[in-house]
Amino acid sequence: MTRAGGIIVAVAVLMALAGPLLVPFDPATQYLALRLEGPTAVHWFGLDELGRDVLARVLAGARISLMVGIVVVGVSASVGTVLGSVAGYFGGRLDEMISRLIDILLAFPGLLLAIALVAVLGPNLTNVVLALSSIGWVGYARLVRGQSLQVRELEYVLAARAAGATRVRIVTRHVIPAVLPAVSVQATLGMGGAILSEAALSFLGLGVQPPTPSWGTMLSYGRAHLLDAPHVTIFPGLAIAVLVLGFNFLGDGLRDRLDPKTIGD
Image (cartoon, rainbow, N blue to C red; front, side, top):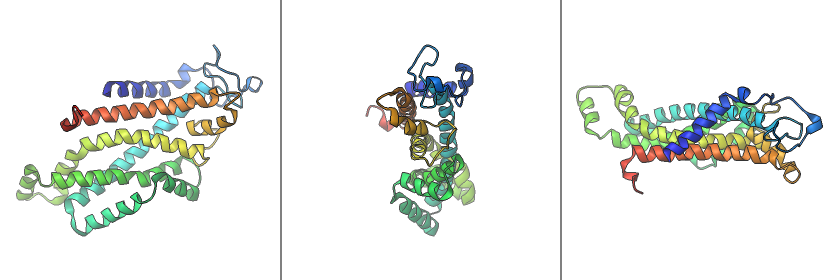
């Protein structure tokens, strides 16, 4: 499973980066005389409602989705790891405050909060990243807090405390490194969630704005042509499904490798 997910993700990244070399068409160039033309030997994925090459736009949209996923997961994992480790190790009022904030944010569907934030801030790529990051850290913080509660009772952490190490040093040198394997699994799975969320916001018109290609925007405009030109929605839809499936496979495989208790389940 790890190998299959890794292959899918690696191929997607390579195709996204090498998109301009693989397809000799600009994703914004319009061939209006051939609009909605199906897949051919020249245009492998066909043309959309404005005569733009669907393959070129799918590859360009892959760069947007991967960039959003990497930034959102990076920011969310960093913030969640710091807050979760601090709450789990320090305890007391600090733990109470962070835990209550986590509970409040978990009480609302994450995508609805992202929609509300983007609606307030304005629909563009930067605000999508800010909205998804502002709610994405919650899952990491809850995970890391639980892990930190266990790590702080381990012998080497108790030994460091007895040796006079400060709490900040123990958190940065012992607690955070110990929880990184769990965070890496969560981050891999979170990439798929971030890609889906970005596509959903773009589908609703709250994400990446035209003419910048986005898988969600392609699905939104293509739904009007499901009967006469289904290729306009099939290919970006397959791209989302395959890439998210690849990250889920990779995350599940990493979890099995990093947690021996799950082997054989």
